[in-house]
Length: 296
Length: 239
Image 1 (cartoon, rainbow over the protein chains, first blue to last red):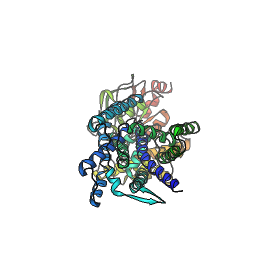
Image 2 (tube, rainbow over the protein chains, first blue to last red; image 1 turned 90 degrees about the vertical axis):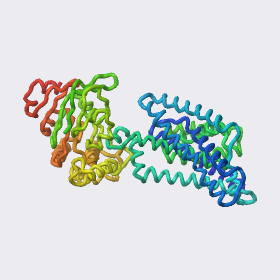
Image 3 (tube, one colour; image 1 turned 180 degrees about the vertical axis):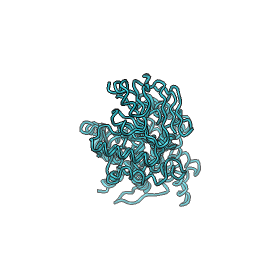
Image 4 (cartoon, rainbow over the protein chains, first blue to last red; image 1 turned 60 degrees about the vertical axis):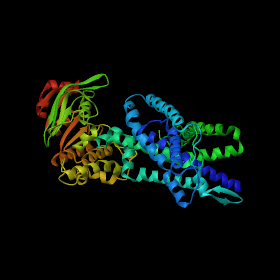
């Protein structure tokens, strides 16, 4: 029973970070129709920046309550940095290609993935970077006869909070109406006085922020390593294929499905764990080509 | 108020407009009549800024609009209701209207546009029917309702010029009368209208002045009765 509870918690932890990545990917596609292949790399970059910032500011030794508070407050810096990177990349690299066929955007985001992966290797080196001091300082809580890291619960709370916050933002605020209008008909949005270029920068930056936040919250639990971005991108794609590209609800449910299946896979059938995920994605595509919550 | 001077516009490689000039005065309803494919929509979209000009210029209230992005033109008081209505399908009608109302309120505060009264009151004055649709999604509107929402939404901008592309197309005769009434009401509010229309009959009932367009060139300009009397124009428009 204890093992079962731990596995459910692990799935939820995993779902939280996967949701953050997939929601950003989905938001960018929903508003701008860009399939951002560099999205996983933004996630990795967020993890690296946060781990580096926490490590540089607080060293690698643990500390008291204030120390922990400072580290936690510094952690989201990865997300903010990636949002800033996004706000620069959209107008300079992507915007000149909007009038061209969409393959150009796929190519440039793929190129960006390569450049960023190598840049990270150059800047942060090959050794994994971690903010594990946060995880250690927060300790663990007993579940049955086992211990579970308290920090993982924080990640779940952040994931749930982000889901609620994003939903509220998109469906209940003025900017959300503007985002949805632009995603449905950018020409008409412009004719009603909306500065579509500005909306695009904002949407791209928010999407990047989500990816960066995914990386930032995960780095105290799992170190930032080279290649983590590509792995995350692939899983995020499975999430949005299952949930429906461009749908927030889809990213949420998709992240839960992928996480639970993956956790069960690691436990019961580790040899074919990834294959099962792809089979699920294939099955969803056969029955509902637009995903569970996608629109044609 | 609006001066279009000898504009040339392309759609991709196709040269659509050849030296088109026209003007719209204050509180005037001007109709652009022509067959499908004559270039009416291209003129409207050039004025709105969706298509770049290869030659000529467009001046609005003494300001050169050439090269200005569409949202800046909207801010200066040009309202637009496209042929396909452009109602956001997954937004409610209320949300559809909200977007232009924000801008209209700002314009009203600055004293631009026709805003003598609140833009919202003006829009509902023209089409009170829209009030009953506020909660409905754009997707679930009938053709006539969509056209009403599109016009009301443009009116929320508190425009001084309204561009209507085929506002009567596909409407039942009863609804056409309703729209004619609405156009007159908008005119009475002091808003100028430039409307593209395929039928000479409808255009001549509504327009103060009329431009006939064929193959991207203006072939006639004058009062509606002269157009009806001119056999060449009638022939060119009927095809």
